[in-house]
Length: 307
Image (cartoon, rainbow, N blue to C red; front, side, top):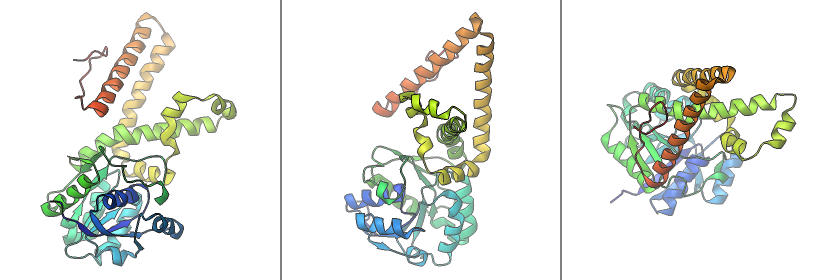
């Protein structure tokens, strides 16, 4: 039976932290939720909506059963340092950061011999909305949460955090911090960079009003994530810049392929464009079936056929 959390502290009461609170409250898995944040207006809204039960200080949060740090990743080193001085002997710290190697290094440095009480995690869920008012109880249902436990991480603490996310509806996956950052540079951080870059490029053009006036569903679908928090995605991009630049280099090389094919437009180049489109369309449909029905992802040949 899952152990009920007596006190959950959320540092950064936004979409992710607030939704975790509401999910646990929905399942009666937490007794009391306290919130710490920079914006009094947001904390007041969280109180009004029942996302948290009380506003707290870092010192209060450090004594909670589980402390969930849901700030932008650039703020986490300071948060860990402030928690370290007051951290309860049996308190567990976890996070929701989209990068893991930098966050783990920061926790190790700040917590010292208390590092075993830290469980690096990343819930793979979200919307383009921010703040406590954006939170909802079902955000994590049937979504993945990645646990990136280190060698020193307490198994008991890891299990407690795992059960917390299970209760919130998440599917638990485990990988190293390095594996995590490589994967999410490719499938999350690069797509956000591309969406922001495209919208920023168009916004700076002399005919930007015309471009946006005629943009329709394809533009909407491709650029939805460019409406996300600039502060958060700035921090993620910088924190995971090594892996992100590797993926950006690979993407740029692929764009160069398309540029070469389009510049020549001879028969073999037109065929290469079609092959690339075919492989992409096949992979995208397979991914959709994987998400919706749990079908395994196949491998693809150069021509787009399933191997």
